[in-house]
Image (cartoon, helix red, strand yellow):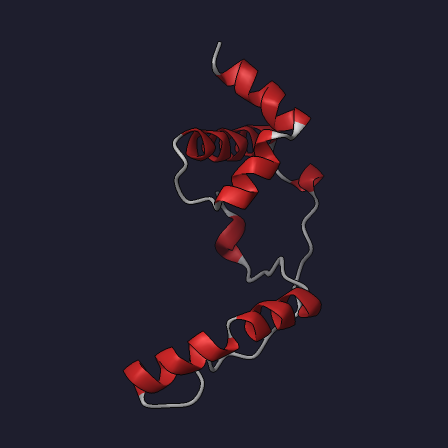
Length: 102
């Protein structure tokens, strides 16, 4: 939806570091086993070129995104059980689900 015309990143340095630390051992094993090297990723972290706010997205795209998320939650696909349970308790998600099921 035109978002990929410029490079952007929603992760902060802190989030990136936490993710990389969490998967450090499994990433190293993959790199050694499949690529015969120590590091799986070569690209350094880059701060966001642009930070987007929810107000910058057209409402129809937000509706499509929320509909997709709710649909996936309903069929338990692509989301973790923990995330699924958190979103199912969210009032906005519940209201959106009601509107979609009309």
